Amino acid sequence: MEPILTKRIAILVAKNNFVYRGVGAYVKSIIDWAVTERYCVDIISDDEARDNGMFDAYKEHVNWIAPKVTIKDPVYKELSAFSKPFDTVLSLNFRNALVEAIKQHTYDLIITNVGEALHAVTSIGAHKYCTVLHPTHHESEAGVKVRHDIFSPGVCEQYQALCNLPDVLLACQSEWIKASADAVYSNKTDDIYIIPPLVPEAALLDFGAYTGEKWGVGFIGPWEPRKNPEAYLTALKKANLPAVVLVPSEASAKKFKAKLTEANIQHKIYVGVTGAEKTRIIQSMAAAYHPAVSETFGLGALETAHSCPTILLSKNEWSQAHENYCVVVDEQYVADRLVEVYGKPVEPQVQSYLVNREKFARQQLKTLVNRTTTTQVPNNNFYKELDKVGLVNHKTFTDSLASMCTDEIYKMLKIPSVSTVEILHSRDATYYRNKGSNLMPEVNSTESLFEFS
Image (cartoon, rainbow, N blue to C red; front, side):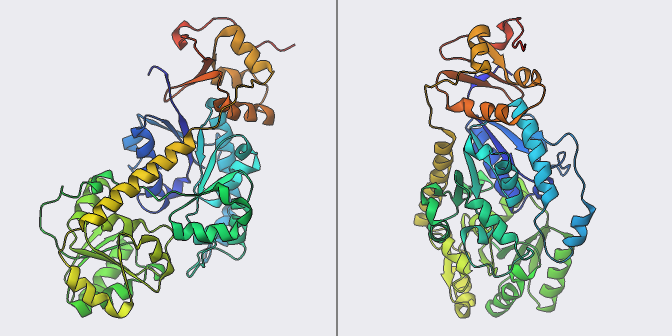
């Protein structure tokens, strides 16, 4: 592929999170946006790519960068039997993969997804030289009360401490979340943005695509206390409406089947559906109900709201983040509202809001990719050699160093902000040339790039 002038973003995501739900679905939506914008994308992970089929669609467009040697930690599994401690080894693997990535490319934007990833970025100081965006996926990161926490004591405080670091930009899912974050991080309100999650499947924005039968009240998620499935069953029993359940595992499917059968509720259960199949099922729902006690960013509610009236509970604070496109009611009225909205289309004003919401989120991300530039070129070896040779291969530059020391890491991350240098990215390579030059890799000088005395 011929290099072009473009942007390059890095997304830090753990191998175990690269699944089609939660953080994995969020990452997928970011990748889709970046590929649409013709940006180059690197997934920086703690281990080799997960062979679950999700990455297959991106292999020709996206790099997966892992550490050369993955550190293993048998103690972590023991500690996490009942709740999750801060995963120091995950952070170290992220850090080592990040250094490998910086040896190959420079970045206009780095997006982290968990506290351990943010720790990896900030522990080497990358946030001081590159735009780093951390979505507040966990309630505690935005200062929202956590009603059903999965973390060990102290982990939330560690996450908040990382979010409070200067030069770390925070992406909040809504105005309600931002108001909470502004109160917690009052010293850095200018670094807190409203960037709603993108819809995981763009096809959901085509509101007239599905013309088939609408059937069932949708529920997305596993059978677990945080998702509050008992409330879902109670409402459907009272409303005498059928169920459509999308679950990630056979274990959850068996639990739902037993409970729905016991309650004599008609039902369809789908296990591990993704992509176009999941979109079609969501589009066929006649209504949806998400009574979860605690949600990070409510992707299930966002997805179903594009296809059918979606009910949320007013007593669950997270529902406020979705009140512009969902129906938020008291629990005693859920069954009646489900009957009232069952089978009705998404209202035109809600459609318009969702389309504009998606455009806003995409523009916010695009704005962050465009970094503030300077004409002041550092007086160091890299820029001297760029003037001398005319075209520099990023990997050749880093390979010529005895090690990728801290100063050179920072030098690489700063390059996108120097307006006198043009960056040429392809999926696999990154080159630099002086602004106005027409040199391309195939006509690169054969001179040695660097000479060290």
